[in-house]
Image (tube, rainbow, N blue to C red; front, side):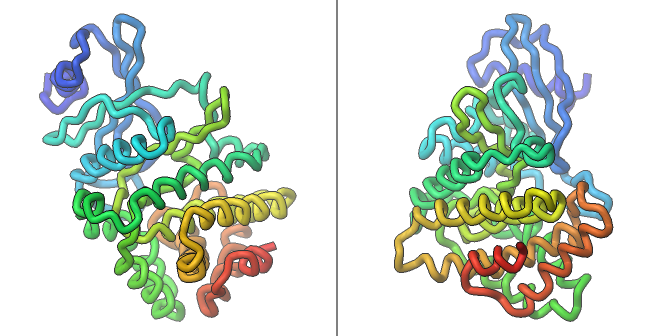
Length: 332
């Protein structure tokens, strides 16, 4: 049995995590995501766990390489965020740093909803974006200007490889007429180091508890000590894109985007909010365009919807707005 197979990797990880059972388990691949292999583990005693291993080449059509050490920083983000907002992330049970494997609590579908699936099905619960914004804002606020946390996440190069290059730099190359504007936003983002960033706050990475509605953030492979505006813009982007995909719910989804923004901004000192909001408002249309013309386009937009996203995003990239409310109004 190869040492790098799941059957070879897991027993030592079980033992290091203090689990008694190191044999007689089954491994079931899970779907979702392009950057990791993720499996469910069923132990003989009935307990279920989750393991994920970072991939060197992401599962997308274009050639997208990323260092596998990002797995270590994901685990560090989960531990830090879980200490700030208990229950907002899966529990980390163990780590195999050599092979880039994380052993995590398994969150079963019978207990949790996937926010992306709910949104695409037309079930846009207005409480969810507010709860997500609150958890995210608490994590950002608790780590703001924290030199110790910053030192634990020296991941500028990783963030560039996973986010800035495939989303912004690649899109700038596809739209030469917008290149200067997009690259200026990239430079501002890259040079801002204020708080602990998740980097992939997407509805596909957010579970919602059926019991009490609290959100659980997954997949922090892009963890970075940088600009919290990126997290807000990344999540808002998905609400805006779904408002294009589901025009009958456009007003509702844009109202939820505004509620997300106001809740999240409320976690920051009032004096700094205008600059922070302006960075979100500049990033958002760039990310919108990136999800139709970047390395990782969303799968649910048809050709007409993709063209609509371009029509909305391009003017806002050319002439950035300093506030989000008027930006949402133009999308409506």
